[in-house]
Image (tube, rainbow, N blue to C red; front, side, top):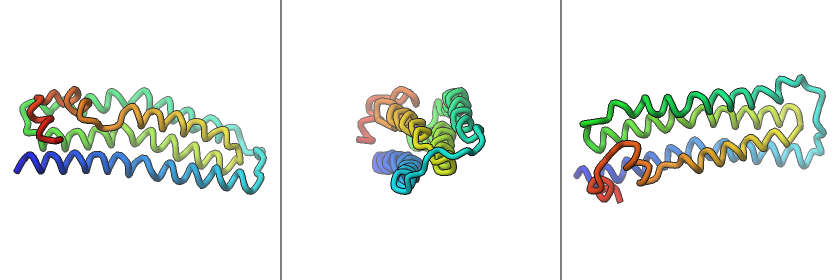
Length: 153
């Protein structure tokens, strides 16, 4: 019973991860399309709209890994299901600041009409890709046995 439960939980983790990622991609695409078709030229909005997304990205980079590690510290000696629940929480904690920076970049691009800010979203997408939940990362981050990983497959 635990095997199918762990398998389902891992699929839920992947779905939650995609649920964090997809709205940012869709909104950024909408902003790019809107700015491109309307012929918006960069407006005279304050420079804060250019720097704020990058500042939030810097904060996300600095805080994501320590928060992720701290969220996974208390998984030793727990069942695989409990470890996977902790992993889901840790991934949300880790990726939410990046999502916020991406959405803020899209909002800034929309307000200013400057699509170059959307390059930050591309950087965030690379971050999302490198931190996606895989079985190898589950094995390394949660320190689970090969048998437990095989039960998730």
